[in-house]
Figure: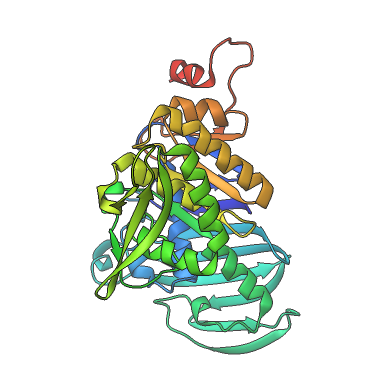
Amino acid sequence: MIRRLYADNFRCLGNFELRPGQINLLLGGNGAGKSSLLDALRCVRDLVVHGFPAAQLFGSTKTIWDRRDVQSFELELEATGGIFSYRLEIQHAVGQLAGAQRPQIKSESLDLDAKPLFRYADGQVRLFDDDHSPGAQFPFKSERSFLPNLESQNGKLRAFKTFLAGINVFQLNPFALEPASQQDHPFLLSSGSNFASWLRYLSEERPRAKADCEERLAEIISGFQSFRFQTAGDRKSLLVDFAREAGEGYYLGLNHLSEGHRVLCLLYAIVYGLVGSASVLCFDEPENFISLPEVQPWLQCLRDLVEERAGQVLLISHHPEVIDYLAADTVFRFERPTGDLVRVGEWQPDPTKILRPSEILARER
């Protein structure tokens, strides 16, 4: 579980701190910085887990009007083994050098319960054993993090990387879904475009999760029965089987489902396939494309599994149904009153007002 997130000099986030709970609703007008928060999480994950170069992730993310040349990020995580504290500094070039030098890692550190596990600074990596005693030290280039290269013999580092790998940021786009797959894939992309490849992976590694998803979708989508794959050359097409009250059933390719049904398939597959104690699900307006009666059942399913499996959710929404349903949880309101840096604070509806939380919020704006 993320206990604290700090970002400085990242887009509109300056000296920004958030201490989320288990289920979190992020509110605010367009351009208030909510998506920037999720992007900061995604960038840190991709640097540490997937080994992306710093320039690719942070190249155009420095706050435009801030003249400082260093970005800072901090994560405090409660995971298997204790409390992890991660800190990252990205060095940017400013002034005349801005176009000639690419962003690089200035420093990076990881502690467990205030004891060192990893250090990088001044071009040198310092490793520590599981008992926190000093280990190897050697030079390493600053273009990438060394953490993706670490083998699994250090169980504490492995627990940290496993947790970061479970940070999933979704801005689902039903128009981007690929109808077929060449191979399975363990990570679902932010847009959901590789859903077919990820579902193949889920079918092999966690068949119970796929079956639970299908069972719930059968209650939501009229006639829905199951997902299956049909081989066509070197690809497998994702098909959806439907039943009819009279006559034989039929199937549709993923690209022949309505946009709303594609998103429903994604949303329920994400909940059953990804919620867990080492997962953080981040959604940017997940209710887009689905109908009003379909919103609350999914939210209820999400809440039940997050609470049951000790997961965590950060959800951005402008939708009254979502706001009213999640108003009793941890709600943060993002604002940029002067158009520059984000201000954030916890928000609770006034209990003296006999209005729905979404109506109270609308009148406060």
